[in-house]
Length: 448
Image (cartoon, rainbow, N blue to C red; front, side):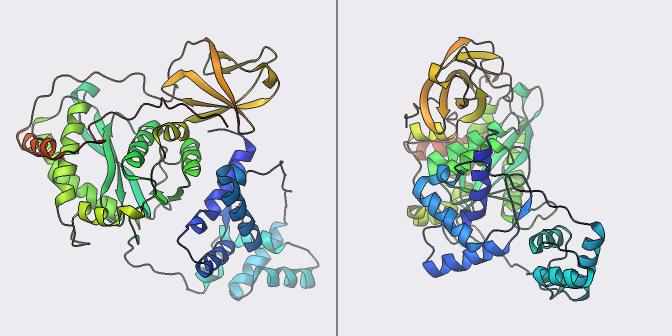
């Protein structure tokens, strides 16, 4: 991801205010939510624990409404000071909190100042208490227990995860990796597909196809795997206005629907694949698309009493429409920062490009399709400055991606899934289907 400090600050701010951007909230509901967010401990752009006042959160919300994600970027860099505290004072603060959990950080700060003559800022104590499990709710036994959760509407919450699939001949016997995205309210599979690896690019392809088919979700719930924790994914979701929610390590609560779905996949789909094996990813994805569309989506879910397709159809009008193809392509581009040399050149992964001579000496942002390094869009302070002109191209694909895409051999055929595929082909309407390849990132980015 881009190492631009302003972009990192904007991402950190978006992650704080994202829950309060829901347009369906009333003024009173948003006020309560902002108060709750102000009481929480957040991570700033440097990973430090921070709390923000309600006034600050409202200011960020106003900036987001006025300028979108770019409106959250600070106009200039502001370096926060570094605070240190005597460990003996922190031990005393911990003892005071344990002795009487109702004591606030501000009160403990005053007690230490009056009895020990040492000044310690209340916010420093708040961060210390939060990092060491000394928050009042935990010490007083007021931790909340949550019951079964379900999103209120279609598109409110999508949950994504990876699953180790069957071995595939064209992958030299390695297991294919399934990425799938489920809508929490309807249990519909927004998109899913088998990929050769669990890289961030594989998941981004899955997410992009799901958005193109089903619209833009409000929240995306994922674990902390490398594909879901990448900086590029955070930037993509921020551009879309999607809040990323990561599950807490060693806390599987909230992922039960995905685990139950993968159990169904193993028992009803994978068992048929394992019977005779599969030769190619294309063939595997053909069976997968057929099973999802003709079997899973049409079977009543025990939790909702409805089929996933029927429940989605009833609430699909509440989902935000996806951007057009060109805009979606621009949103899913990767970014990198480079300084323009005196010869008006920049480099990316060993390739050399020429840019506008007026950018010499400036730090510019390169936006590109990682599968095609011959086209690089150049931005400076969020203003479009045309495409970079390739001078020397030795690397055509971002090194993070797989070396090459294997060519699928002719399909073999499996008895049960052939019947399902025939039903799917008869019922399939015009539009994007699972078996189609990911959309190429060939959209023309509109200059600002």
